[in-house]
Length: 151
View 1: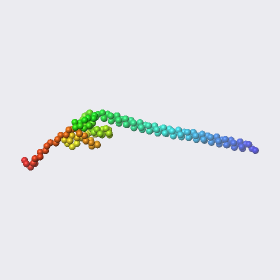
View 2: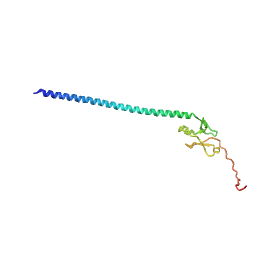
View 3: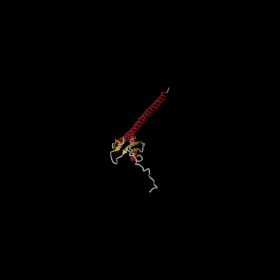
View 4: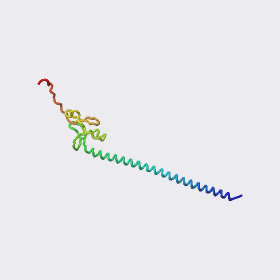
């Protein structure tokens, strides 16, 4: 029996096994790298989400600070007619709707209703709520016996 061909075949088998082992090790290394890249992508995505949330929080904090500054320019007062409204502290003095002020964080200057001196009411241009602001006057008496043709 010739041993040389058997030794040559065994060497080739060992060589093939070594190459297969290197391929498997290379594949495992590539798999490890792919998993690391996937984890890195997840971390980058989470960081991007955190940056977006931080920007939203900063925006909300700035809006709150701006609203606090605007809100401090008004105070809740009782009008001579008994209505509760927000009154500006700075010129031009005006009344603002307390409902919109509190619920919507919006400032809407109240507008006179009809002939203000006779109605004494003001309304919000946004929610249309009316507030008694001034004590209404009675309208002047009209001359009932007026005859436009007698002169």
